[in-house]
Length: 305
Image (cartoon, rainbow, N blue to C red; front, side, top):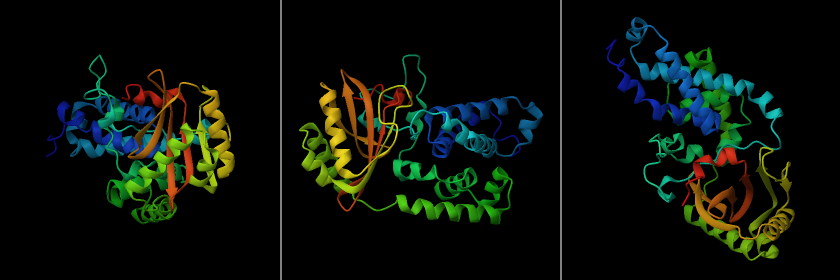
């Protein structure tokens, strides 16, 4: 067993799992890909004799990737302070809705976003809540609650005792519970469709009805495109802003598309995706809207169909 996992094909076969772990930890496809590439660089930098001593290369790569992500999360606060406006996780499209096959670019490379399994653990509401966790809480929560890694292995990543890691996961779980209000897929899609129709017809009254009075809209342009730099609070203010944007954006096409596995909206102009919007819905009304306009975060949507 000591040499069972040292073949190049087997270690490369771990890439999909590592990308899934890293995206959930970082909320960024780009950063996840960089973290995984760094982990592989460290693996191939090991002497052959050391590789053969490692019983499970996959577990080794997961540990190293998680540690790299932990370091990135630790430095994220400083990086976010330099970020223009609000920072939001990178939204994921549904591959089945794309107008292309297999997710490969002309050079034959697979887009990392195509390798991410879209389930409730990548819901935008949960990823946003995870931003409020400490780096250690986030690692413990994702590795244990999402990927079912035992606390003994998580302890090796965090450099803490298994009992301490269990406490971190419990603390994170309490925060995450607020992002898991059950909403049926049909009910969510119906509300999003009504928002789309009201937005298209510039019906402020209808939008106000669909938005919770305490709703909040957060937009991420990264300083690269125009958008509000601070969250807009209040359903009425959000409705007015949406209609004002519609007036300023002739030719914008709204599409109903899955965003991180749940119904959302995509705004496209001349075939180019300009905006991706995610929604949190409770009791039939929108409570949160997350709008991503930073073009660097919309790369996986470039071929959206």
